[in-house]
Amino acid sequence: MASREFSWMIGGPQGSGINLAAETLAKAFSRGGYFVFANIEYHSNIMGKHSFYRVRVADREIRSHLDTTDLLVALDEETLFGDYHHNPEFPTHPGHVHELAAGGGIIFDSQFEKQVKEKLEDRDLRLYPLPYLDLLKEALGKLGRESEFKKFDIMKNTLALGATVAILDYDLDFVSEIIRQTFTGRKAKVAELNLTALETAHDYARKTFGDDFPHRLPARKRRDQILMRGAQAVAIGKLKAGLGFQTYYPISPATDEAVYLEEQQRKYNFVVVQTEDEVSAINMAVGAAHMGVRASTSTAGPGFSLMPEGVGFAAMTESPGPVIFLYQRGGPSTGLPTRSEQADLRFALHPSHGDFPHIVVACGDVVESFYDAFESFNWADRYQLPVIVLLDKFLATSYRTVPRPDASKLKIDRGLIYKPSDPRRDGYLRYAPTETGITPRALPGQEGGIFWATTDEHNPKGHISEGIEHRLAQMEKRMKKLQLAAQEIPSPYKYTLHGPQGADLTIVSWGSTKGPILDALSEMNADKKVNFLQLRLLRPFPVEEIAKILGKAKQLVSIEANFSGQMAGLLREMTGIRIPHLIVKYDGRPFSQNEIAEGVEKVLAGKEEKVVVSHPGG
Image (cartoon, rainbow, N blue to C red; front, side, top):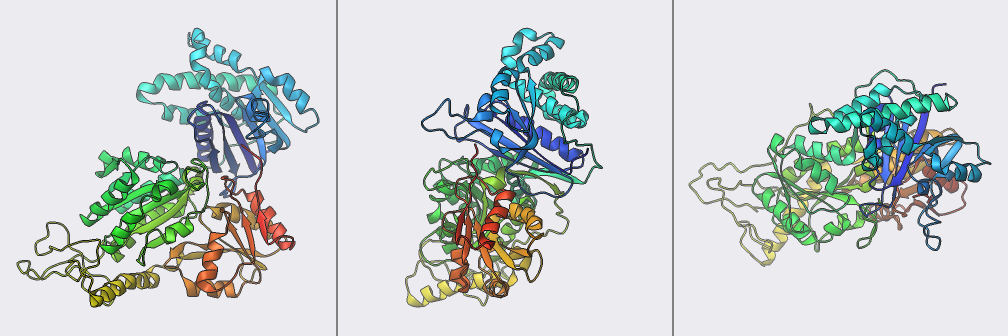
């Protein structure tokens, strides 16, 4: 029987190839016409620790993961039952068998078959023991390389992939196609090895396990869609916007985006610089923006902690940028380097001392990441100020099938550029007060466009001045730009109200919680009308529009991946409206669709004012 929805997970030690297996399967499902959402959880050490990858598939749009799994692939025993036997005093995770749905299945190494049957005899599960070593030797034997089996132990991931496709009765050609495209050129022999292993395990599983698994995934009509993750969407949005200069210092989870951009430098004629630290990264980006190129830097919380002086530098000198992409992760300090959180909101709103203008926007999904990345450069140029784009680890690393981004209607706006009537005259006033707060900027080398840019307060020419009149005029000039931005930035970039009007409950949230909230809405609306106010533009905050929407709400709840409910606090500060209920998660793992529904159910039952959700896992 064809399945409308299916959830798959692969787990094993880091370095065992779970990434390649999961992403290959996700791409194969996408090519077969399915909607896909895939996300990984991994430790901050490089090798050895347990990690796992979820792939959710459906015949309708999906944007998040579930806490239950239909088919679990275990590359080691720890994936099944956790690390209690390795670390009984301080175990870190309970394994994933408890997450299996009734009627689900497990693909595992046949050497653990006895233990698995003993521990799971009371569970309604289907067991698929796979003799990894024997199958690997058989596959290598077909190529005359059986004696090298120890060298290719990592190919257990491909064996598990072949068994998965057989059990689901999915088209193996889609998977083979992805493998061939992954290993090309000098790696063509690697493709041959993996294809042989894939087919060997596939044939074994079909003959041995039959067709008893309740989920079948026949190929569907192909859709015009791509599988993309947040870091890629941001990078592509930057390229479309005309990025000229990118700086970064390696830090998880922002590095993925910078590395992706590094690979595109020659093709798109821009420069990526890995700096010695984050102080250099922000200051070089500010300098590049002053030089007339579109500049950005990408970082995470600990790196951004070193950048505040540079942000103030950009604001004081009215630099057209840079655009700062802040990928949030668990803190404080080093915190959880490879986990996700939404706890840098207040930091992004007030990243440097004093009053100064800057824009803060929060992306909710892969699609918004592309368009926000593009538009943020227009805002930086138009309003001549730094822009902070808030993302997080969950959004950066999660894959989702989306329509191909449409750049046909996107327009680059470089803002006001100085055009002297008589270049021979020295009369340019870079910081002349204007009605909007914006003065035309001169480009380096432009005749008649000489000016001074200093981090001290200054006069209209740019010379340092502590005069009261100049201080008042320059402060008012700079802050006027926020007022103008608040008027001009279109409403879709400020907020979105999802769901029915006149709902019994209004969810308020921001960032990557968007996906699981939208997935949970249909489930919740079966019993009670629920809608979702997604906040996107956080500075300048759209006070009147948001206050009007919240003023009509019957019941309010804020959902956030942080401890204190930072967005709820911002809403109260800006609108005076107190949100009485919080659903929060701060264990470093993203919200699932299940957790959203469970949290809302508790709120509606009136049991708790603050609901903390967390499911045990890896």
